Structures are given as C-alpha cells and as structure tokens.
Length: 170
Image 1 (cartoon, one colour):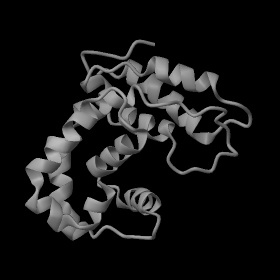
Image 2 (tube, helix red, strand yellow):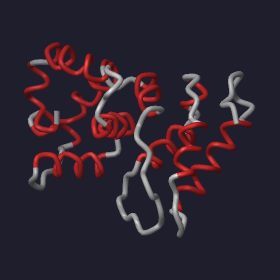
Image 3 (cartoon, rainbow, N blue to C red):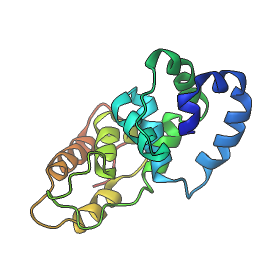
C-alpha cells in the first residue's frame, strides 16, 4: 500500500484489484495497527504523519504529492477505510504498555482514540471505547503522558454529550 501511495497512477489503473485486495485485510479482526493509522490519516487528510509512515515502511525518505494522491485517498476512504470500519477496528487496537511522558513517539494509539472521541465518531457508530481507555489508564506509569489528560477529558465529554441519542457507557 505504501508503494502504491508513491505511484498513484498504479491505483488509477487498478482500482478494483486494490479494493479487492484491501477489503478482506481491513475486515479481518487482526488488522495491522499501521494499516489502521494509514486509514485514519487518509480519512483526516493528515499528510505529514502519512509521509512518515510511508517513509518508515519503505525505508527511504519520500513525500506523497497531495495533488496526485487525492484520487487514491478518496477511493480508499469511500471504499476501504470507511468511518464505521475504522472506528470498529480502533476499538481493538493495542494499548501502549508503560505509557508515560518519556515516550516521544508522535502517534501512539491514544492519539487516535482521542481523535475518534473528539469527533463524536464512537457515539455515531455506537462503539464502546471506555474499556479501551480504562485499560490504557492501567498501563500508564509516571510521569503521566500528556495525551492521557486529553483522552480522559474526551471520554468524559463523549459520555455526557447530549448531541447523541446513544452514549458511551462510563
């Protein structure tokens, strides 16, 4: 997939094959965390971390051209990385063991869960994230990572958010 991002003309000529290849992978319960992150970055059009993941995977610095990538991104978010599927899969993403402020990785799973909660996607798609957040809290060590305060705040806000008929359970 990372290679395809670098050669968007391949995607345009092989759309159906790519969808047929990715759909079972995304539907699998054991979807790779990196693939979920790529999906969320495509959905949010957040190119910098997408470039970082592609560069890291291909083991050389590369930059996705947003203009040429636009068609591929739309295809992926409409047919493969749908909101519903991403939210469902993120509920199973691994927590970060011994999470604390010494961890300097920019994109840990808690960042993605915060994003999903802040956008109301968990309520929209009726996906419980409380147990995931609780498990992550239990795996934290001191000093507390700053994302944890945001994560807890987003969870509480989502639980009491009156915009949704369905709410996360505390």
